[in-house]
Length: 99
Image (cartoon, one colour):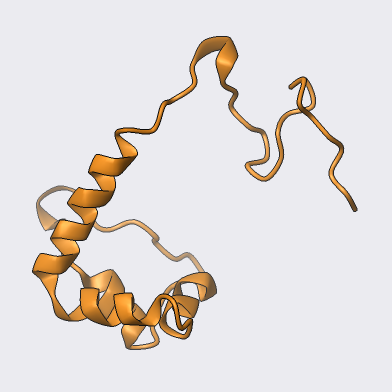
């Protein structure tokens, strides 16, 4: 079946912490997301963000602020990966992945 992974756009979009509420209710879309509720290092974060929208807003703003400090590589310094798990074969640092 088709599953929409992005929220409704336009006037129907609501920025909220429903993602964490879904995870906490065992209704996450992806298994990797649901695993957040069961891991000892992340379960407290799931619970806190599900219960406290202000904490969630702060966490998102803080994360965006930190990501803005990442030096983005452009031109010949960076690359667009064909597979996000490995660097491209034409990259001088390429090592054949182990099978």
